[in-house]
Image (cartoon, rainbow, N blue to C red; front, side, top):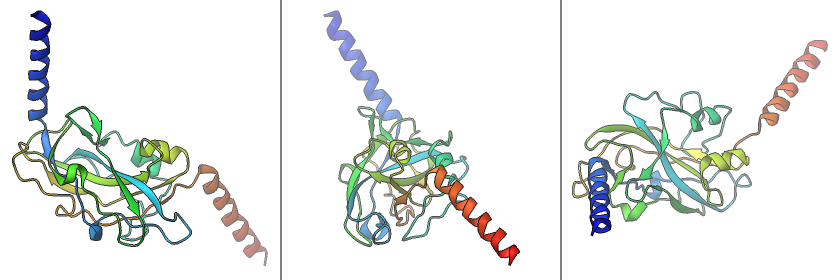
Length: 213
């Protein structure tokens, strides 16, 4: 009897916890989804798309990075973006699972996505009916998280930041990422620190050679 009551209480707490979260629809279209990088850079691969989010007051983590609609390029700022304390990878409050969708990038303008078929879900840590700042992020499916992909010098990419208003419950309409202004973005390799060092040395050598002439 006591065990039954404990289970019932935990179930009720979980339900209350989930209902207190804001609801989100993580979905986009092919025209506002993920693009592949230029031919020969990434190739046709399967990526995982998720998103990072923070409060509406969180500073934009993408300032100083390159993110044009077709070839979003990783820069030295990537590690700062990934470890920004103001943002966290989205998790579904039901089961505390990572919000992620596999996308087959088979060509330009391919790769729309719809987590849970675009149905709303409770975003862990968010507040119902609040405004958050969010941006989609993609990385190779063989890595569990974008942090693992970046550490392996794999291909990553991110969309622009958007303001998103969470729904108060699962029955309320919630805008998709596409309708909230998320644009298409590309994925490209994260340069290793040594690569930047070599590039810097190369530039310095060119300047010295030019001065000697």
